[in-house]
Length: 131
Image (cartoon, rainbow, N blue to C red):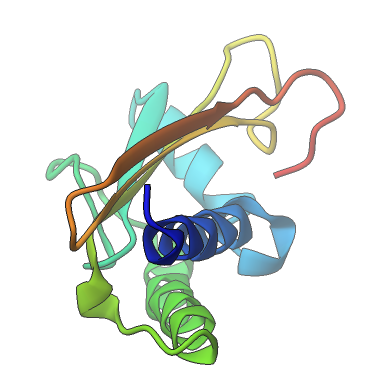
């Protein structure tokens, strides 16, 4: 893997980590809405600021946050002299366990760079983890 791709992937994971953090302001709205609508997991396309599940009714609070998440990704890329088109694909899948509260979730990130490098990484929530 080229150094450029490693750097792009690291930036993408930073943006995905921000999207999972409490600072993103998705908490607690995304978890609550997902559970209310019967989803145990939901996938966010960070490049296009939309959810993969077309039937998902996105709450207003989450819709307000999505442009800020994309803006955060753009600023992280720009700081390292990259642009959005350097990423072909960036999805974050949030997974809720029925035994944990809504604000705890696991996260899977899939990144594909414009040169075709693909990386996947998962992070389990476990007890005590805050989204």
